[in-house]
Each structure stands twice: as structure tokens, then as C-alpha cells.
Image 1 (spheres, rainbow, N blue to C red):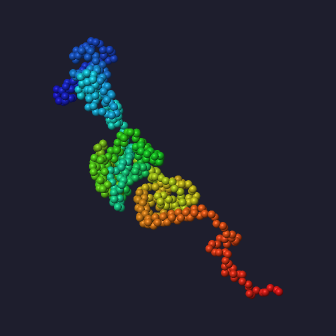
Image 2: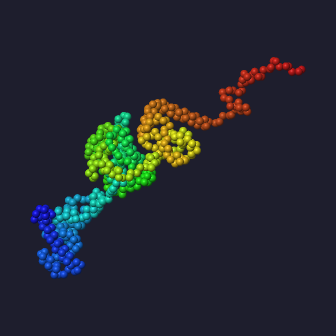
Image 3: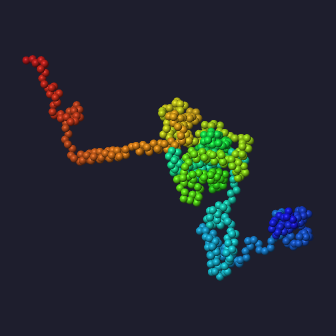
Length: 554
């Protein structure tokens, strides 16, 4: 027997295989000679004699070969006890089975040692020989793993035995894009004070399933919302050259275009009506993962794990678990601002991840994209402004003569001049949280969105978060400048004045009323501080006789 002819390294398996081949050839020739006709006993005996088998064994092999038509189906059986064959007496088998059912397959999940103790105790009471530990364990191993996990309320074991063959497979770029959020394992510092911030940033990532290219991302200090998804979509769909240049990132990131299908989890932000409408409006099919099936989002989950693994090299990292974190105070070691980390993340995606060899592709994602980009019809939004605002957060405000007020800022556009005082309802407002120097207003007549700028044209293009922090700092400064002691003294003095007035009024109402003084009809009763019983100097002069007057006739 030469090494080239060997199928198995084990000699016993090799001999069984060769014997199986000999039997397969003989039985197949026998069946071919008779076709659909019934086999004669003489022909069966002849082949059985040739193979050195009994007539009964020959009929058994013929039936097995007809069922499977394989060499292994007619191989000689190994001698000795068959696998999983048990030789205990019926009483002990029943006793072990009851102990497993009543003791081991319970939500308390008792150990194997406890089960063995129970079996031996029961055998002792029944005056039966105690079985070996391996014998009891063999009976437990025969139980279906999933059945045992469900009986023992072992969620981890049940999950491990559940088949998860489903996955999303793409055949071209942007056919399927997966999107998800994660909290970054890193603390950042304030842009101005360089003090550690109390919350960690969130990143929204989107990946193309076919090329494994990261198509877009968005970093925010706020928790995930429809705003995060929309801004990630804006970054994913449009050309990124300007953004790369602005952040001084010397790397290619050629991905752009509308995805055919957007695959997301079942979070409230992905289920929002506004987000669903925006996707439907641009012809993007929105698919949500089946509940309890995280493997359907495996591509984006692995991407998040890879990116977070690189983040653990930055100062201020929290690592991914308490074991890796140990006693390190992550916030104390933080050093990067929001803008610095956003730039570093851009380098990580465009300069490293898209360029490294992917384990599933065995090629860099950017090479796969470049290869298929020319042959793929990439769609772009028909109306840039409409697409731009469809994913942005919205609000409703009234048009006032001094403009539209939102974020405690007035905005104005000359295109709205004709609507002042004529449009009574609220206008739909869209705003970009990255730039509060402008908003987008839906014109009440045409329905198109127009851009309205901050009434102060010198207002900088800062983010909504920066604007709110600035106003918060101003309020704190104002609180520091006021004289709290003076405000306290004023409040106490006013309270005392009111208390005294109440006391005087109550006391006056308890005493008997005084007699009222009759007054003239010409409002003299309204004069106070003047005694009307004493004539004034003017009245005395009027009463003197006029010396120049002519005397009366005698």
C-alpha cells in the first residue's frame, strides 16, 4: 500500500475504507446487472461468497447502499461496543435518569458534583451499586445541549446553541450600508479651559458591506439621536475632499453616493417617522435588524470594535472593561479636545482603516472600491438643499417683524419680507447643530427651503453646543457680578413693609369707625393737610370793601 493511495493516516480506518470500496464496486455491479428487476437469491449468494459475507449481511449492505450510494455506508463495522451503548441495568438507568431530571435540569443550575452525590445517595437507599462518575457524566452529555440550557435557564448556553446563519450579502458598492452608534471609550477636555469634560463623546459610523469602506461618520457630545444619523448620512453621501482639507488630513476618501439599502438596529432614532420619510424620499430602502439577532449587524459591530481598539491608545481612554481599566483615572489623563479627536478619528478612518488589508477581503477596502467604482452607477440627491435639510432637526416658529427667533437668536432673509404680517401660522425651520449662524426656512408659498442668516451678520459659524456653552458661561458671569447681599436686604425690606401694612390695616379694622366730616360739593373734601374752618388770606382779601367802589344812593 503506497502513501499516494492512502486516504487515512490511521491504518484501521484505511483498511475499512479499502474494504468499503471493494464492497461498493461489487454491489454496484450487481445492481447494474439487474436494473429494476428483483435480485435473485443465487446472484446475492454469489456476491456474498466473493466478499466473504453471509446472505443476511449481504442483504443489509445492499439496502444500506441503495439508501445512501456511498462507500462509507458499506464499510465494515468496527468490533466492540458501539458508541453511546450503555450496559447498566434498567433500575440504575432509571434512577440516574430521574436524578438528572429532578436535580440537574433545574433553574438553580447545580453542579455535576452535586448530581453525582445525589445519584450515589439514591443508589445507597435502593441498595444498588453506585455507578462511576464517568457513567453519570456520559448520561448528562447525551442530553441535547439546547434542551439542557433551556431547562437550566442558562441564557448564555441557549444562545450558543442557536443557529444564526442569516447575514446580509452585497454584490456591489453601496448596495447595503450598515449604520450604528457607540459611546467612545475616551474622555475629552474643554476647548478653552483644557479641563476634563464630565461626559464622553458618541460616534455614529456607517460602513459599506461590499467594500468594507467606512462611508461616513459623525462625532457628537450629545447622545444618539436623529440628528446624529442625519449628519452621518450627510457626511457619507457627499464628497469629503473639503472636509479632509479643512482638517489637514492628507488621505483619500473617495466614497460618495446614496446607498440603496440602509441597515440599522431597532433604536428609537432609527425608527423615527422623520428619518424613515427622509430615506423614502431619496429612494433609500430602510431595513431594521430582526429583534434579538445582533449577528445581522456584524459588519458595523466589528468596525466599531476595531475603531475603539485604536482609541485605547489615546490619552484619557477608559478602555473597554474594568479589568483593562484597573485603577486608572481616565478623566485625569485626558488631553484631547473635541476638534483634535475628530481630526484624529478622520486620520484613523481615511488614513488607516480604509488602507489596511481586511481579513475578509484579503485586500484594502479602498482598493475594492476603486476597482468597482467605475462600473457602478452611483446615485446622488437630485436637490442638494432638499436632501441637506431632510435629515436635519426641525422646529416650528412664527415669523415676526424682527425675524425668526430660535436658539435665542434672531434670523432674517429678505425672501420672507412679503410674508411679514400676512402669514399667521408657524413656519417649518431646519437647523444644522454644527453651524448656528444660519437656518433653513420652508417658504409658506413655494414650499422650498430658503437660507436665513443670523441678523447679526458678524455672528460666527459656531456649533449649537458651543453657543449654549457660551450663553451658560455668560449667565454664570452675570450671577457672579450681581450683589446678592443687596438683593437679600431688598427682599427683606419689602417683606417687612408688606407685613407692617397688613398689621396696621388689621388693627384699624378692629377699632370703631370715626365720624366723617361733611365736605363741600366742589372737591374741597379731597384736600388734605388744610383746615377748611380757618379762612385763607385770599378769602380775607376778598371780604374787604372796595374803597374805589361808588357809594350807594342815599
